[in-house]
Length: 443
Image (cartoon, rainbow, N blue to C red):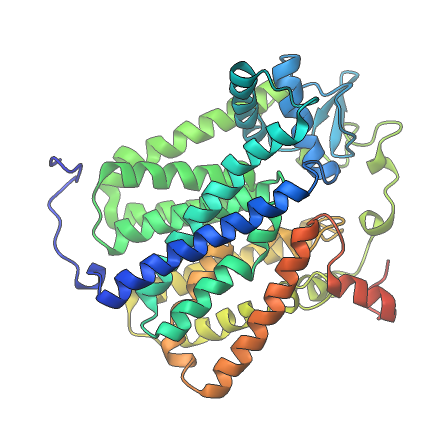
């Protein structure tokens, strides 16, 4: 290891050398990234910190850990339906690592300022949200823009995918609230960026391996289905850079996995998350919402209809964020691309997309509840944005494609902007389906 922290001498990579345009674009990346963060923070300042039972469930855990020293949320300040009952006590059904880390931050805030989360709710909650949502969002947008610039030489398409990343996805919209989807998105994006640096930019610094492992595992701690993403990414790195991955990436991942399992044990008494026990007495106790769900939570649609609505209907990944239609087109071009890096990333994106869609089609029935968009596909959005840019120079040459792309971007921004009001509400597409009484809106 040399003085710079490299595991072995590096060889110059001509693709890694910045061009004057690249340097200018990096500045634009960070400018737009900061603007996106400022937008989210501005919305947070005028929005309640407790928008729905989903985020309330996590805030209750934060309150209880600091105020009572327990994961039991009996008598907590905010009502929630996202809870289970064990041994006569209520617990949040959410993965415990993120609320535990936020509780540590709240404990520090309380010690330094004497603020309490039940009296100075907005001050405390907005400080925590700024730490977990706004700052990482800014970094994510900046790094995603750099990856876009790596794969797209055309300045127009560089700017397009940068704006799409910052303003055209639900990552930004969900960042106003305390949830695991936006956190999963930035941690997955950081892991992807680190892996690309290791695999294709000849970056041998030990801490890049370490942070890549930490972020990949933290994605899983917040979004369990992303284990597929993390395992494939880890195997990919082992196959090409096994030494640094095993020496530094694996310990980083194991550190997060250990913390996740510890908080699971403390909060559940075991090592399996509560939300995998939906058909048991943990959820189906007397008085539980889940013993007699209503509305969208009571749906039992045929799986073909459900899949249609997840992709093209009222919760549609493509209908609400049509920029990802361009991602699909780009991936078709990518399979004919001669560059191994483009081929690898394309197959990775397709595998993650198919796995996540199939898994959620088979294991869910309520579209994520009252929410905007296909929220279970928010965490891999950074991968999909990069995938859309891989072959933009090829598919994006005709003027009519650019004109259509602008329409897609406008529609995606409208969806994301609507989400900024409250992610835990009906999207414009869902409201339209209900108003028109269209057949695929059956609740």
